[in-house]
Amino acid sequence: MVVLTSFTEASRVRDALAAGAIGYVLKDCRPAELVDAVRSAAAGHSPLDPRVAGALLPTRASARTHLSDRETQVLRLAAQGLANKQIGSRLGIAERTVKVHLGSVFRQIGVADRTSAALWARDNLPDVPA
Image (cartoon, rainbow, N blue to C red):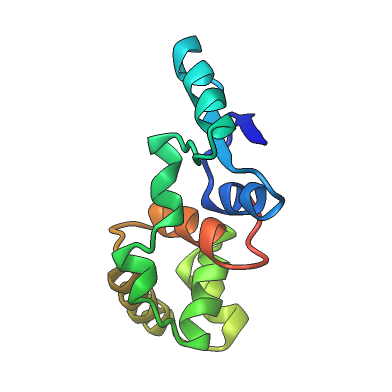
């Protein structure tokens, strides 16, 4: 089975492959690419759109990420859109401590800002809403 979809999130790619798909192609591909993917799958190969193939490979960020429980809590709350002061209040820690945790998280997952961290959290942490 070859999945034809518009979704590029790592979790969706993994779920499709775990469900038995042997290929994963994005809807915006050229018609010839789709035909090639189907033929490739019929020949026993696993066609993957290059834009999603990377989702299956361990990245430097995920390979070296060992977030502490507190860092994970802070990241989850930041991903929900809470400000540092709100996160600190909710967790009973100082706003400055929240900033320290976020800085550590950013370094570990290889991002430079809250938005990128929130997107990373959505793709890599359970129970983070999309």
